[in-house]
Amino acid sequence: MTNHTLLPPQVAELSAALSQPRPMRRGSVNERRMKCGQASCPCQRDPKARHGPYFTLTQAAGGKTRSRYVAAEQVPALRRQIEAGREFRQQVDAYWEACEQWADAELQATPAAEAAEKKGSARVSGKRSAKNSKRS
Image (tube, rainbow, N blue to C red):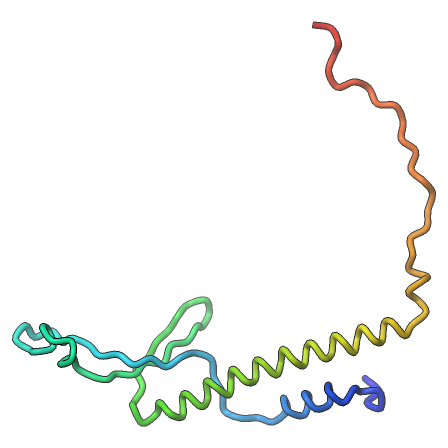
């Protein structure tokens, strides 16, 4: 277990922020207006007369992109959740960076770095035979 007295303040702060649960998700919300299948409907000729708006939540899951329709009332909550997910990923990246800086500082403080130098004898190469025969 890590000795928390040596914990850098930035790592402690980011760790505390990451430990606060909140609803979040990956993906995006899109708005679409669509044509219907009726030939006599004005939506077939006029783009402003298309039906909608319809909202879809699109997410990548298991290497595939999946979309589902959502109600217009759900869109503000979905956008907040997606933004929270983006913030969380940024915090995780910052946490990784802070932990790597901490790890680098820990390595620089140890005297084992000079013991890690490679020592050995010089390589002696022997004579090599010609690859191609000189006879034709």
